[in-house]
Amino acid sequence: MMVGKPVRQWRSICKGLILGALLTICMILLYCLSTSEVQFGLQEVPVPYSCAHRPSAAHSSTISNSSHHASGQGICTPKVDIMFMKTHKTASSTFLNILFRFGEKHHLKFAFPNSRNDFFYPSPFHRSQVKDYRPGMCFNIICNHMRFNAAEVAKVLPADTSYITILRDPADLAESSFHYFGRVVPLTWKLSGDDKLREFLTDPKLYYDPEGFNSFYLKNLLFFDFGQDNNLNPDDPKLDKAIQAIAKHFHLVMLVEYFEESLILLKDALCWDMEDLLFFKLNARKGSTVSKLTPELRAKALEWNAIDWKLYQYFNATFWHKVDAYGRERMARDVAELQSRNAEMASICIEGGHAVAAGSILETSMQPWQPIGEKSIMGYNLKKNVDKAHRKLCRKMLTPELQYLTDMGVNLWITRLWGHIREILHW
Image (cartoon, rainbow, N blue to C red; front, side, top):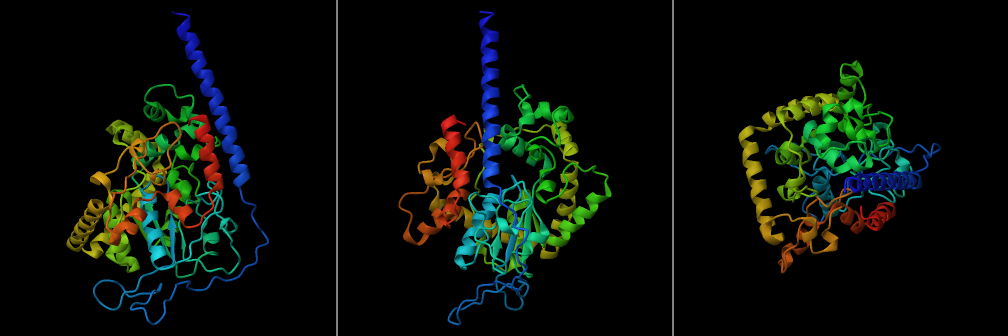
């Protein structure tokens, strides 16, 4: 019996190494297949100042990207030229659903990636990565995952585009990212304990290599998403310059922890309607899979992600300045209205009124993408016999990101191929 146990342990280790090697090879091959060839000779053709769709005079309202402030005076028309910088693990899939519905409502043109659901992340964004891109084309919205490159984004979108993004408390983001991406970061494979996150945060330098494959998922992921060096020393003067550059580019930086307040600020800044903000929380994890960070671990996570923490603190301050300018009482009233409308939609659309585990989702079209190794992402079942007036909206609000992209005509063959490989290998 004593001999059998070590043999089983070695078999398990060998199996893990083989699967890990296969995973790495598959990831590298898929990345090589999908990496776009940067077209250095692309002609420089100015993008029109505004790509706003303008309906005929028969329409009762004008859609424009220039508008008066929605504070109760003047005419307010919705802004439609939008760059949403989709950061990782920040409720961005929920916001994408809002953007998709808004874009369809106003017949807007999206700049989508080709063959996968991101712009060849983690490579820096280049306009040649946009599906069917030609110099001088007019796009209204770009919103898929990318590594931000301001100069290239500006060559795709109009000059009057509104730049929006979202941040999350770096300690919570680190926990979520470690859970979701940990298995595709070879640096984590030597973590052997039951609580791998605790083991990693206790001495991250023991496991971390800035040159390691996918290592950016483990440290200052937000800063990396913005196209910056996530391994900077937190005291480096370049950090403050980078934060100021981000602040200059982005008109609104939302916060996950105050998602509804963020949407109200968005509504005010872009002159949207309350109905445009309706949402159900998508891509949420089962509570049992979320590691509860002790004060000690939270402090360690913030210390390890010190750059993201500095970024978050800066924009947390600017966020509350915007809330104060909007008015705290007014904000509370509008948030209450949004919550009430969302609750009403949940009662109309969602079977049981709440999200369910992946194994309990009845329709394949409602199954969200899952992290490798487990099915921890929850989803919804659409109520049967939803009235005709709400049926289409309910389905759209509940549709996961990949399925929605497919419905909008995006070819996701690389993403789908990777999904089939995972099914074959039972990942």
